Length: 214
Image (cartoon, rainbow, N blue to C red; front, side, top):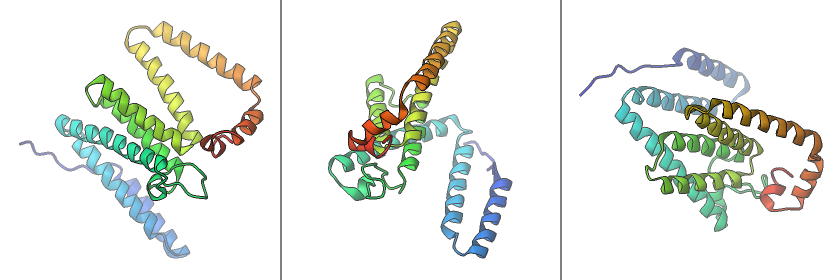
C-alpha cells in the first residue's frame, strides 16, 4: 500500500486558540468543555485533510457523511412525529423547533445544510431517485429546526447551485440573466412586502413558523 505522511493543517492557529482559551478559562473559571470541543473538531480536520488525499478513502468518507446525515435527519423527523423530546431536541426554550442532540436548532440546521451539500456533491446514493429522497429527508429536517438562517442559506445554496449548473453546461449568459432577474425580484419584494405583517401572520400560523419567522 501507499504511505502518506500525516499532515497537521491549521495546527498553529488552532494551538494559539486553545492556549488562549485555556488561559481565559483559568482566569474566569471553567472552559474545559469548550477546549474539548476545539480538540475534537481539530481531530476531525486532521482526519478529513489526511484521508482526503486518497481518492478511495475520500469517496468512502463523503459517502458515509452523506448517508449518515440522512439517517440523523430521519431520526429527527421520527422524534418530532413521535413526540419523543429527547430525540427531536424540542424544549420549552425553543418551542416547537427541533434540535436533535445539538442543544441548539441553529446548530442542527447548520449540520444538516452542510451534510446536504456534501450529499449533493458526492452524488450518493448513485440512483437519482434515492438521492432525491435523501435530499428531501434532510430538507424536511432543516425546516423542522425552524432556523431562519438555515432556511435562508438553503435557498441561496439551491439558487447558487442552479446557476453554477447553468454555467457548467455552457449557458453562462442564461445564468447571468437569471441572476439579474432574481436580484431584481428580491429588491422589489424587499421594498414592497410588509415584513412585520408576515411575522404577525406567522405568529398565528403553524408552530414551526410561529417559533421561527414569527
